[in-house]
Length: 116
Image (cartoon, rainbow, N blue to C red; front, top):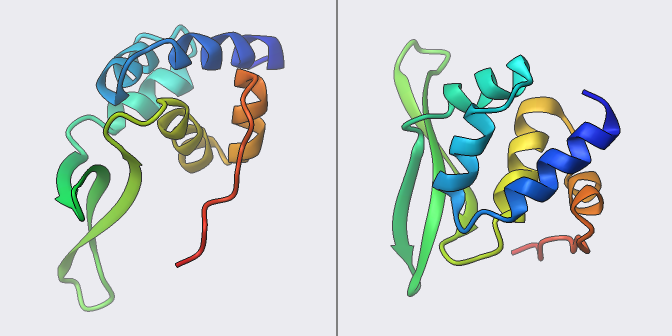
């Protein structure tokens, strides 16, 4: 995908109100790799309330070394946060695009998450 196409896609994704809407737009992408990657994420998100915040997690089940299924959970964003957080996560996880570069394409400022 050309950088200009990437920029256009990121900006249209950022116009969406929430993760489900952005994911639907990704699934409809004309870029086959992007739409396949988005399709592969269907049904893998969960919402949980933690410390009063509604958090959206990416949940996958994988086999560990012992052959047992193990659930992996990754915090993607909080409900109500700017959808750029999901968009940057998506391109980082699926295509190794640095989150900072996705924010730049969207014309937004990226700030490193605070370490706990």
